[in-house]
Image (cartoon, rainbow over all chains, first blue to last red):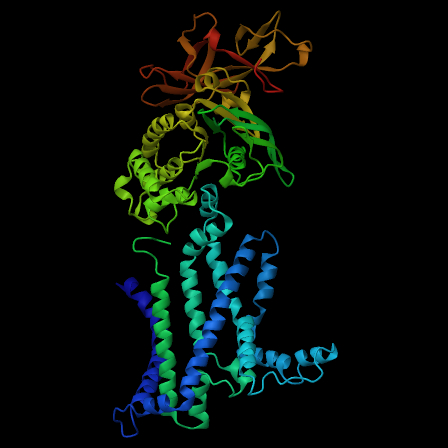
Amino acid sequence: MQTRALPYLLLLPSVILLGVLFLYPFVLVAWQAISDDAGQLTSAHFSEMLGHWKFNTAFKNTLYLTLAVVPIQMVLALYMASLVTGMKRGRDAFLYIWTIPLGISDLAAGIIWLSIFEQSGFLNSFLVTFGINEQPETFLGYQNKGTIFLAIALAEIWRATAIVLVILVAGMGLIPKEYQEAAEVFGASRWQRFTKVTLPLLKPSLQTALILRVILAFEVFAVVAALGGTNLPILMGEVYQWQFVLRDPNVAAAFALVILGISILCTLVIMWFLRTPKGATI
Amino acid sequence: MAEIKIKSVARRFGKVEALKSIDLTVADQEFLVLLGASGCGKTTLLRIVAGLETASEGEVWIGDERVDRLPPRDRKIAMVFQNYAVFPHLTVFENIAFGLRMAKLDQNTVDKRVKRTAELMHIDPLLERYSGQLSGGQRQRVAVARALAMEPEVLLMDEPLSNLDALLRMEMRAELKSVLAESKTTTIYVTHDQVEAMSMADRIAIMNKGEIVQASDAVDIYRNPSHRFVGSFIGNPPMNFLPAKPLEGSMWSVANLQLPGPAHPSNATDSQIEFAIRPEDLTVGDATTEGAMHVKVRVVEPLGSHLLASCLVDEQLFRVVLDSDHPITSGDSLYIKPMMDRIRWFDAKSEHVL
């Protein structure tokens, strides 16, 4: 009896902690988004949010950024993981170097890339010194939305590909070598071995990495703040704006719920799309 | 025609010589078993033929084509792996069809071949299952079916039965033998199980420390080991060995016996040879029997079909197989007479038969 209860008892503190620090505030935020000061249900905050001219832009920007960054990160990480897994020597050294950006906070990452792209930054001094440009350019000015987007995407790819890489390397390490060999003997080319054996067997890791990355991409904030300021509105930036600048926590809460909503939706889609066929054990 | 020719193949891992210049020809449609203890290089040799490992030296030919520079998929081989390597993300059907799909055969042919091989291996009711839903024996069958479906000229099998329990192994052994006899492929089969080797093989190649010490059929290997290692490895229990001292003529002194043996080498004084005989090639006599060896019984193991007596001669272990009803206990004396035509002599230094 005691031994049966023990695991639950040991888990209890973490459950309580999550309940107090996560579930409870979450309920509060959700309530905040759908109630007025008198405690009545209302859709006013959502209407205000949807009616605001920045909502569509912020929604689209967040979506485009995710669509631009995550697929490139997945492909890059898959390629890097395949390279590392195939290495006989030096794989740890490569892994350590590739994962350095993981140790840097996203704001710091944003500032690093800002020092490259800003008007007196590395890129401009390079271009001017070598005579490619006569004048420094304002890459990150409000009239250059495309460049801002590109810089943010670059910074995000640089910063967060490593986490995908780490998950995929671990996953690839779990695939027994015999499957590759069997595929090789039975006629599969290198590419076919990758698509017919490695990828399907990597599904659980791909699922984890993809969900993690997509959710974090919807929550992108500090890198955008550093590189774009308010020139490129995104959802998380709007939460901040409404909460701390416009001092309207209700609309901020509504924004937060939108982010939560699309995160859950994407997670479900990814889980369905990368599901393991019924009966198969991978 | 798919004769396999292995010409002076060597494989070194750093300073370790895993294979020392192997020469072996496997005839078309022959079933050759590579037999040896773990670490003897048999799997390495198989993997070199498969192309999963590269030889440091030497050539591999399949039919009229030199294949040692070709990738595995261009060698017209199929393989059964020790751990089966049945893809967990594919159904049994798709597993068997894997090689056929890679070869871009049309759906009709794929269906036909998968059905036929599945029926042959008695797994046709399992075609829609996944590997996780199969027992070890069923997975083994899928692995064999996947190889047979390729209708390969050369079939390579790496200890395919070693992960099955004893009863299942015996069953699969007989079944594999009959299936492969009909398939007309040239087969190389790796195992460390001598019973498996002897029961299935047309020819057995015994490997030791990266070399093939003898390649012949089961009876010949059992009766006429060319090398001391073969005698000590094959047979359960293996051969008995006793040191022999030179006497007059070509006579040798073994324990309390004087036996005619090979002619003395020129440097007779320091020549050392060994007398060898199988434990069942002995007849039991009594103290009066002429030409009988006197041994002391230490342990008697009743094994049902026979008794196995572990005895001592001059402090050397000497095993004797006796009839089950033989009244004998440990501590007894035993007088045994070797069958003269079954005695073998080995050079103690080179370990070759004399």
